[in-house]
Length: 195
Image 1: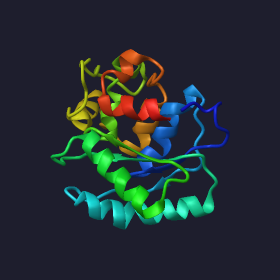
Image 2 (image 1 turned 90 degrees about the vertical axis):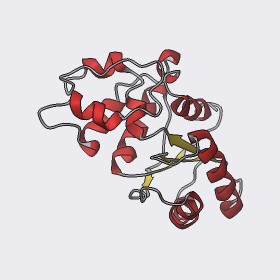
Image 3 (image 1 turned 30 degrees about the vertical axis):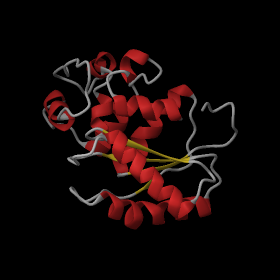
Image 4 (image 1 turned 120 degrees about the vertical axis):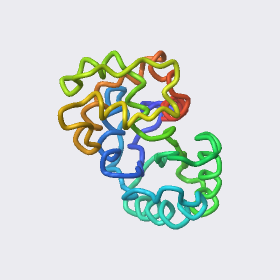
């Protein structure tokens, strides 16, 4: 789906304040426009997926759709330590959301594997050039499942990685138009290919 094919912004629900600023920064260079994102204010680690979606995501989605006119709604959250793959979680969450809310506008779920910060590691070339980074992050064929928070904490010193401060700044330099970047994360690639 491309921005010029259908007019209007995309709706966006994210897990927390970091992603509220970082996800738009990740895609704005590609011309993707979002209405003001809504935040879920986190999720409890190990929370049951069905309960999380019905109790946390659905009410926020209903409120966002009542307040804003969007051409599609994207919900982005972290896989964390769930046993299911990010793709499996996305499929289950989409079924629940569509059953609760409907299909108009279309609703899509993107699950970062394991956290949003894994998506930042997909572009080590640009991340390592950022003034925040003092120790280069490694280049991986696949960043999904890596301990991205620990890697970023070690790369940004002396203070370490602070999600709400550093996440959006680093997201702004990740080149999601480069297939070499998106190929490093199956979860990011699915998300980028749907917007």
